[in-house]
Image 1: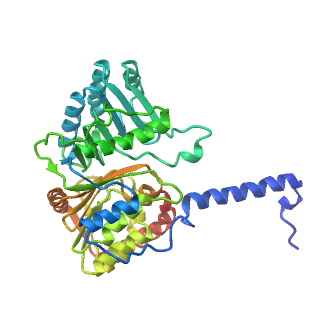
Image 2 (image 1 turned 180 degrees about the horizontal axis):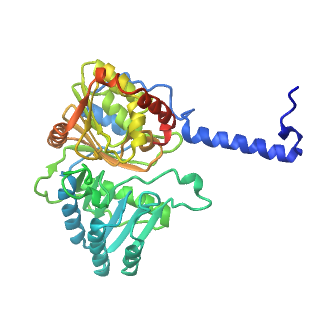
Image 3 (image 1 turned 60 degrees about the horizontal axis):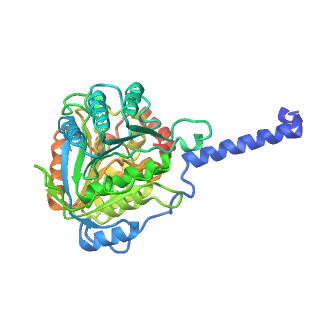
Length: 440
């Protein structure tokens, strides 16, 4: 006859600790990996103003409580050959302040070039502040940052791995906000690392974009830095050195004068996920085209519904995603789990073949473009600190569209019939890894 489990004979206090430990483990697992209670059962909209229209912009601004502004300039930068010369030139011209926030910082040639300028500017009296993520920048050259500190610069780490802060470690600062004198700023997908060098010419050099902005757009991006800097260091950055008068900056060659725009600085909370609403509404209001490029694609249920619903309504919905050259294969596998449903709905999916596709951009109806640090995954919408800019401007959106179709020339389209014949093992792996999509 089967007896009682051995733990029944334990002293009551040991059994109590065991039960509490099991319950705590189950609670931690549910909190980190399940979506229970995190979001409404379904997002719906009863009015769909055309994306980029005045009614759309005013409604979006009001819903998110983010200002709708006009003015400033934006210049699209493709790959390292355009990105790093522009950033280095801006840094070299700094007169008062440099606020440099990025997610990844790795040792190498790019790191040496950037740090050389930062140290030189700090010695010249420019106030240099650098904020790095505690996980994304774990391979940063700490000795060189010590030199920057000795030259007068300041460096801080967001949520480093420390006892007592373990519950916050999985929340990362994924923002890119490089701001010089409060007048010129950069955001997008690139960080400091040699894999962003070149022109995406081989698998060792990634495909990516950044945007150089001036005027009030630069002032808005400054907020992405100063907000987290204040919370991490206690130093409040105010005044003209950081927030100058946002009158039009001189337009640089190749820059678009921007009509209207909304900047979203996202710090997700339990009941507030502004980026999720920002992207979902933009897609749901599409009438002609949705062109989305994302480095990491694990969309939540409502985002999948929006993409499929727009495709079924006759909207040309196309997704440009990484192929096997991705740096995080488990995330790509999780995204693959949703390909079939999207393809069946009429969504066209492409995978970039040349190298790792790290671009993060959305352009809707040729008039509304979104660029910044966020990916099309749950982590970006609900866990990470992110910064994105939505721009309602035909000229800038046209640049994004041209870039999208140029990248399609280096991509392979995924067809539904072909996709349904993929190996059983691949399907099994997809079903397993998608269980953890809340953390991707």
